[in-house]
Every structure is written in C-alpha cells, then in structure tokens.
Image (tube, rainbow, N blue to C red; front, side, top):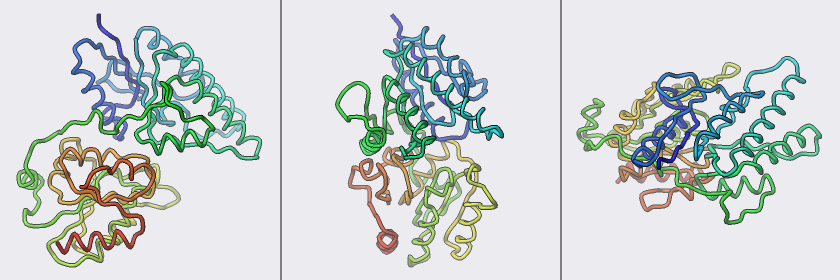
Length: 350
C-alpha cells in the first residue's frame, strides 16, 4: 500500500533557500517507490500539485483536508509562510490576526497530531519580558510550539537554544529531533574544477576564494572583503556571488552597495550580483579553492553542506550551530576577525 506524504513549503522558482531545500527533500523522497507525494506551495505557482495561501487569520485551516487525506505532513516552517507580514494601521486588527493565526495552527496540529512534523528554518524567538503585551505573545507562541507534535532542527545547538528560550525540557522523545541539513542533498554536477572554470569563464591559473548565496548583512561578506584585502599576491581572487536580500534595503541602506564600495579598493575582489541556478551554484563551488562563511549569525548553512559534497575547504565563523556543522578536517574555524585575517593570509601564501 502506498504511503501518502504532503510537503508544505516554498518551491522553485521562488528564490529562497527553503525552496531549494524543499525541492531536494521531494527529489529524495521520490526515490522511494511506495510513496505518493503531494507538493503544496505557500506561494501561487503552477509547477506544484497545489498552492495554498496560509498566511494569517483562519487560512492555516486550509490544511485540514490535507491532514485528513495524507499519512504524513512535512511542513517547512518559516514565520513569513504562515503569519501576515503586512503592517496594520489598526493595532487591534493586527492582534486579532496574530491570535487567530496561532489558534488555527494549533487546531490543525491537534487534528493531525500523529502525522505532522515541522522542519524549523531559523526560528525567530519571542523573548519573555515583564511587559504584559510581550509576555502574552511569548505565552501564545510557547503554547503553539508545545502543541506542535514534532519539531525538527538542523543542529543540536539550535534545538538547545529553542528549548532554553521556551522552557521546554530537552529529552529524547519523538517531539524534538535533529536532522542533518544536508540529509537530502545530492550533487548537481560532476564536472572537474578545470571544466567548471571553463564553463564559468574563469582563469584556470588563479586561486579562488568564494562567498556565495543570498547577499545579506548576517552573512558577513564585508568581513571576508576586509580580511582578503590584507592578503598578499596577485594570483588570488575573491568572488562574492548571489542576489541581494531586498527585505534589508531599508531607510536608504543597501548592504550590496556597501560591499561594492569596499570591493572597489581591491581589483582582486569581484561581486557578481545575480540569481544563481542550482546547477551554476554547484559550478561555483567546484571552481573554488576555498569557500568562506563569515556569518554573523546562523544556526546551520546549506552552503556548507553543498560544499561538503565536493570535499571543499571551508573557512567558517564559529557562530550559532556552524561549529557543530563544521565537523570534518576540511573546515577551518575562526572567532575573531583577526583570526580570519591570519587564515586567509596563510592560505594565500601556501
């Protein structure tokens, strides 16, 4: 008998890391012949089985038929998928929206208690404070998380932080689980480094340092520029590749423009601001000699897991859960910017 599984998420062509993660999850599940998969996108799109707007008010209740007709429901959780991000002029309406959204999620979780699991992607915590309003929202979130049947995280550090914030006991049971970020990942290319560089039009003689992914302040690419600028030699190049995070373009501040101003001082630094397909993404990984993850904040990294597929050397900031994820001898960890300086100088001199 077939087992019916529904995956609720964003999916490509939506440009976000969770969409790529969900696609790889679906492709991995498809390899099991006894599974019937239903792809449900939280954004309107035609290349999935169903699209459902689940953001705010009662809309999460649309998942009830999905719960009743499937044996397992995997929800890739990000707050923006299920809560309204729009600004209300009337605060009362905003609070009603938040309350209803939380209640509806709880209702669906109770109906499908033995079926639902949520993969948590960078959960934003609400902290408990003495302010009555904040405490009410914190309590509401805590109840919702408590009644969610199964929560999956990518690192133990993130799980510990989550449980500490909400006062949950961290015990071995079916409610809290850790799954490897790269559990569903596979290579998109089997090209050699020489072949990949020819495809991308890159010099085969240079040493390439790479920062890749959505260009966002928390990624810390400016730290890579500052440290790389201190390295010796003409053979090394730093490439920063990816599209900008438009949600950070606030009050006239543009992180991408800040990076470009820094990069113009060193002709060895190249910023390629554009969306990169999954295939081209892996081509860049293959082409590189070293991949830098100078993140300011992150619980886990999809870039790190993809780079591991190609046995690449990574220079990784010891923040969040990255220390735990950087679990092989190809990962070079740093804490202070001065340590990043020293690592890059050493690698450029080798």
